[in-house]
Amino acid sequence: MRIDLQFHSTYSDGQLTPTAVANFAYSKKIAVAALTDHNSVAGIEEFRAACLKRGIKPVVGLELYVRLGHRKFNLLWYNFNEAHPELHALLRETQIRRRANVRRILNNGIHQRGIELNVEKMLDKHNHYVPINGIIYAMRKSKKNRQIFKEDIGIENPREEEIMFEYLKNKKYGILNESYLDIKRVVELRGKIGGQLVINHPGKSSHLTKDQFARLKKMGIDGVEVLSPHHSLGAVMYYQHIAKEFDFLETGGSDFHIFEGGHSRIQHSWDYFKIDSKFLKKIEKIIGK
Image 1 (cartoon, helix red, strand yellow):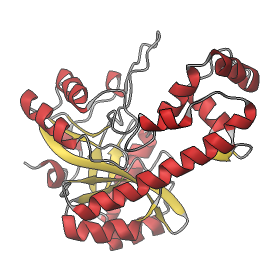
Image 2 (image 1 turned 180 degrees about the horizontal axis):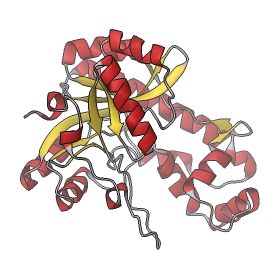
Image 3 (image 1 turned 120 degrees about the vertical axis):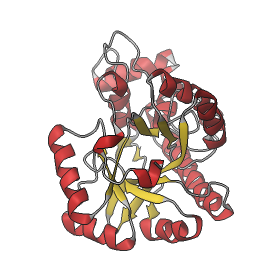
Image 4 (image 1 turned 180 degrees about the vertical axis):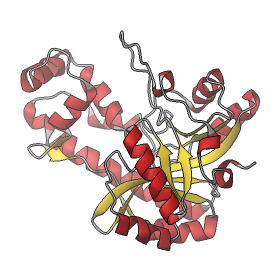
């Protein structure tokens, strides 16, 4: 059975509305899907309705940025009570902190370089999570900005990632960090509102040690995302070994955000990467029978 437990919509940093995400999932013959927007559950109700209309089983989902000591990584959360006020208060805290960080870097940093951007107008378009791709899209609208990008980066049409590292991840202007939460707070809240907590694409950037996996298991973390387009075959095999060693459930997701556009033959991960639930240990704890 085809599943996908990591989609993003316009409520965080995705290109498609929750309804359009559900329609895309239907076009790929996905039977079970989860919308996992960053720090927001605002799109879940729309996504659920669109999935049910298409005959797809929806799973309540969310992606958070967390820290364990000094180690930072992403966490997926499934099947929780998305209406609980403590959850909304926690998410709003991260959203306010994120907006403040964006405002600080854009007003005090890149304006020094002469980049044109109406910061408040841009922020008004993102009432929940402020995405980097949304910031860069707004910056790219200006012909003057595009010329500055060319001069600073040395490329006629720099990619989003290149612009991000030049202006938003550069000590010269300021580092735009995510709004990280102490994982202990998330685990404590999970005790009140339920669900499963899964370490998200650990091979992408977290590089957790076995001791840290052991700590996370002891804290009550349920699983690890094994199948991800961010993982090489070797990484998939390694995280399956981790799941077996620590008795984690296994999940998989495409981490779909946008269509690549242009002339690229691969427009999204589903062009080469498909997830079958039969390869994922204890996945029924999330998706049911």
